Each structure stands twice: as C-alpha cells, then as structure tokens.
Amino acid sequence: MCSAKMESPRPYRKRMRALTEAETRQRIVEATVELHETLGPAKTTIKAIAERAGVQRATVYNHFPDLQVLFEACNAHYYERHPMPDPTSWIGIASPNERFRVAVRDLYRWYEETETMLSLGIRDIDAVPPAAREAFFGYFRHVARSLMTGRRERGRARVRAAAAVGHAISFVTWHSLVRDGSLTSEEAADLMEAMVGAAAG
Image (cartoon, rainbow, N blue to C red):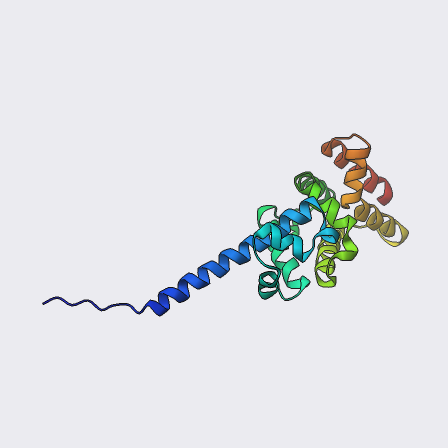
C-alpha cells in the first residue's frame, strides 16, 4: 500500500506570505521611483506612494519605517536600470586627458538617459535624506578625484584644472550647455575638454 507524506500547510502559507510581502514592497519602491521622476522628491508624499502602489499608508511604513530606507531602496531600483558610470572603468587609462575624454562622454550619455530624474532630484535636494544626499555628492567627488589622478599641474594651475574638471562633470553644466545652449552632448564634451586644457595651461 502506497503512502504519501502530506506537507504541512504552514510552510506553504509562510512562503506565500513572504512572496506577497516581497511583491508589495516592490510595488511601493516602483511607485516611489515613478513619483520621484514625475513630481520630484519634495512633492512625493507617503499618501501618494500608497495610492500609486495600491496599499494603505500603514503598509508603506511597515516596509519602510523611515525616508532613508525608502530612498535607499528607490535608488537601488533606479540605478539598477540606469547604472552610474563606474569610475573604476577609467583607472586603466593612463593619460589623464584621455581618461577625462572618456569619462565626460560616459557621464553626458548618462545625463541624457536620466535627465528627468536628476533634474527633479537636484531641484529638491533639500528634501533628500542626508545620507542619500551625501552618497550622491560623494559619487561626484570620487569621479573628480579619479580624473585628477596623474595630472602634472601644480600650484594654481592644479587648482584651476580641478575647478574645471569639477565644473565639467556637473549635471548642471551639461544641462546648461545642451538644453540652454543647444549643443549636442558631444559638442559639450569637446568644449569641456578645451576648457580643462586651457585651465591647466
């Protein structure tokens, strides 16, 4: 006579509950990203997130007890789809001028891809939790350091070169040149190369 061991329904229910919670969390994260990209962080309320995700406000707080945790999840989700250019990919380029040429074009392509999100995020930067804000600015400090590595300027020439590099990699600079100045991103990158060269010289 055959017999079968019946699985307890409890583990199954636990797995289903965990799956449902993961799906709910994902809906909340996606709703937050959509609102950040359309309204901006300052105008994104918990109420709006809950409505967009189809959950109660309490459910949002259950998954994300504070804004920092929510921003971290939101950024992780967004940057997974739109990765920031990786400064370590430029390390192998020995020439500082060539490294800058490659990096500024990588950044400008990323700015084109993420323009709406960056525009609203920078506009509402004071509404961004301090740790998330510091991580954003820290990335650009890291980029600037990687682009100054190996440069031979000293004294005031190095100060000018560092200021020019910092200006060139800024989203605000790209936006001014491309959206206000009607340049292409390639033309803007060429112009920034010339500026850094002039500052160094």
